[in-house]
Length: 312
Image 1 (tube, rainbow, N blue to C red):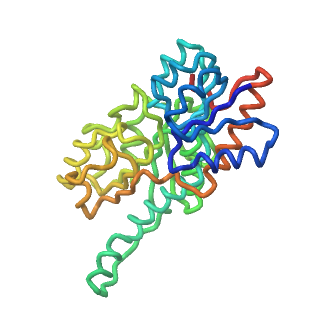
Image 2 (image 1 turned 90 degrees about the horizontal axis):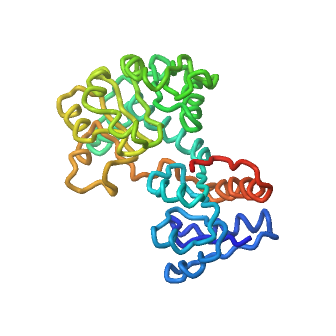
């Protein structure tokens, strides 16, 4: 079996990923291609490709390819149709981001609930003025997409006694940490009740632009929107309009329609918006967790069993 690790791996993580795989399973032979110019030749007889992205010319050159292990949870930037037409399986690393993103979301909620933005502003002015903080136990957190990440968010929020509600494709399969679960077509019920709305759903044809002007208008004027899903889930101009009209309490955004967020975006300058640079899923354990998922699937692939986290 020929396994190629591509140079298309974020943050220069290729060597760390390969080291993590080889440390666990030294008998596995990997070809780590570090130069993009060498990739087309390397994938010509590859059975398996491990990568963050898959350019069209690479897929075309990989005549024997059977399985692509994506090193991300989202795979909207992979050509699903082309892979399906070729009979190539695509798996992701869904689940490895749950802990860091869950902690990031909790930080966002506490930022707004405890007024850390005001504290930072007052500190810069050397201003001592006491103010009242809130408690998450008095709030309802709505989660759009109670999957691996949404479930971890719910678990953390329940620690603070928050009421947690959410949507899930299959509402009969809800984790214990959620007080009320709704189907995807019952989003309005979650919008109406949420003090914090956390977006944790994948970007699909159904979720693109899901949080539009009407959805934002359904939220209370004090509600805070948290997006750690994909930028395309939110109608960004409509979000800006809602914030400028004081029809929303604020927003914490890790993902955007265009990344990096353009310098001219009004979101940069708003005191009621917390911008982070698509880093909510970052963790020092990222590559080790990717290696663990890959190796579980490697064993399944060799045995002809169903692959974990298969999306194509």
